[in-house]
Image (cartoon, rainbow, N blue to C red; front, side, top):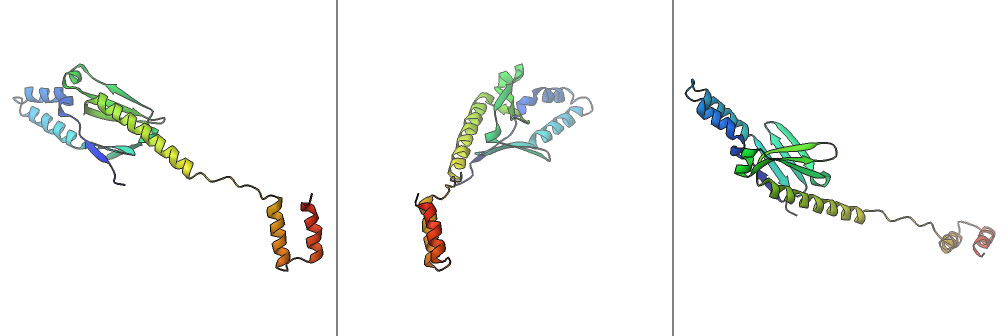
Length: 172
């Protein structure tokens, strides 16, 4: 089965105020150019890879992975300017931690897709555990024990007297 995945990058409009401040500060000894350069470099190092089993956030050299089956909720945070551009920040929550996805376009659609995929992954894992569940061991019955005893007697491993004595236990 091929790995289904896609990569999402944060929207630059999420950092609107940084770019706005950078443009305003360009006349001040080029400080604005430096601010814009740093913000663009920072945004280019952030990626989010979503597969059919996990979500991986890569920010500079830090990688954080969350399994889809562990996700129990997604919170969406939108500032007033984010609402204008239809972007937001997703907080993907598990029992023990969360993953923050900055500047995501159409966060409502993406969060519903992730929750649907998480439910499908939980169902897939439940089916696999049912298939791989070991069958309960049934203790041998009296007929099985008598067959075993007969086999030992036929092979000559037990005497006729021992066979007759043990067979009486199974004739009840």
